[in-house]
Length: 334
Ligand SMILES: Brc1nc2nc[nH]c2c(Br)c1Br
Image 1: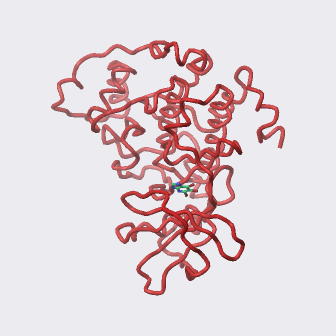
Image 2 (image 1 turned 90 degrees about the vertical axis):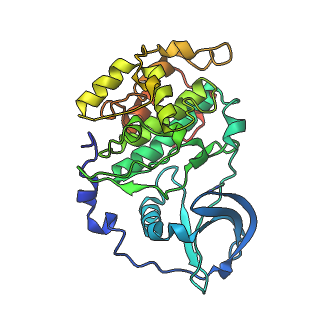
């Protein structure tokens, strides 16, 4: 059971988390015009659009029929969380007359591609944007929702405006104690150990592993910190860093039966000190404070990982902040 917010949905009530029984008032699509394609995935195509009523830019996420059964969940989560800090705002839900296509209209973000962003981030940037991501996740977790797909592609960063938005709530789910959840969620490089050993009773801390992977990527200047070629190799990459001893302890703590034919997963690996990943290129970013914080996120045992709130508190209060500390939207200065 989650160490925090285990009863969030019980307190917020059925009208908050019951996404099956709620009616959606679809708007007609005429108000919006598609400008260009931004991207796409298994479940949707994403476009930049314009709202012709106010000439504002927007993003139109057209859901593919295969995603039909989960539309209600994504809309319910977005409706509940819109307005939360650094959560992408849902502006409208539209359906064409034939009711063949359902689309979500969201606020537009002038996002910079992660591939170009992670090599230029300064220490101040890393603190600022990680704080913004943690503000989003502490709000979301407090309100009973796990994102379940935190990764750079779902964190829109407008570097000029120093704004961050957490997007793509298509895999998000409401957390209830002692419920077993699907383990085929998330994106490989950011999958937490509990998903890789088929432990289904996970919670909000799933997202905190992914935050750890992103934080490691930023401070060590490595696009994806654990880069496995498949789910088994993903676990192997993690074991080569965190060691086998703590992995075995993790399995025992939660009575997880993990069988594998992969010989490499049966070898004993020592835990590597985080200083092992420091290079001449990232030395100026991988401070001892940063390594200490990383060590509290990348834990096999999800119950031991910092919560978003705890992590934000530590990051906000550690050491000096870059110049932007005094001008950013940090709470004290809001
Ligand atoms: Br939502 C959303 N999804 C996107 N996919 C690619 N770029 C995107 C932006 Br910008 C937003 Br906002």
